[in-house]
Image (tube, rainbow, N blue to C red; front, side, top):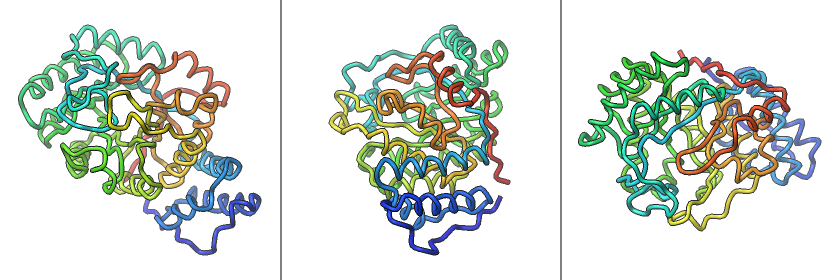
Length: 360
């Protein structure tokens, strides 16, 4: 669907006028549902006008209407496994697996045996996940060496998961060439995670060993091979609201299908260890804004949701999200899958596999 940009027409009401703000946001959500798209100025106007908890809840309600109309009530469930941990060559400031600043509690191990990965895939399937992502640290097989050798082993593991389970294997192995993207597709990988992490402007503040454009190139290689992009970012690293809007717009331009939204849980020993966690309401505002900008995408609750959202975790799923990771994360623990199922049931939602947006 070609979207007609929504541009500012009338000045938005002040946040103190909640009734008028609700009407304004409702009008925006109606237009988004009808197929129009927010432009950058309107998104930033939302940021400026929606302040305070009561106003943020109005924005969440508008975003939830968009989610229900454009995505339905199925929440896409997936799980991940860290198939290789620690000693990463890259210096991502949020990550405790980096060799530049290893976190004190981050495990270090080489590529897991195939049978161990397969057992974890079966456990994820039993927990209700529909996809299972094999995640490996490092710049990626594009650069050869040990990662290139491990790439072949992972392709074999992908094949075994396809043959012996009904869960769909995904991968997150770093940068890949067009030829490697084709190999992944041939092996049966239909979705690949490669996050942009932040806006192009803010990216150098958190990573200097590779560029934002390096990451964009890999996303384009994957999509050219027919693989869905699972590409998102992290809120709470010190980025501005402008950066958050720009990240959403970049993901829209790249036609990314699935967007993980991580909430920074600062890791001891990393450059971002002293960052204050987001408040739950700031996280809700960011989530809702992404849904307004990305009405038909799979928006996924990812790392940090338990510690950042606390007792308000359920509200994220009524602020525009239609997907979440279940089980544990790469270096931190998640909540039991049973708690996730209870949360979905309490909200009238059901776990499954969300409809993938079509762009052409």
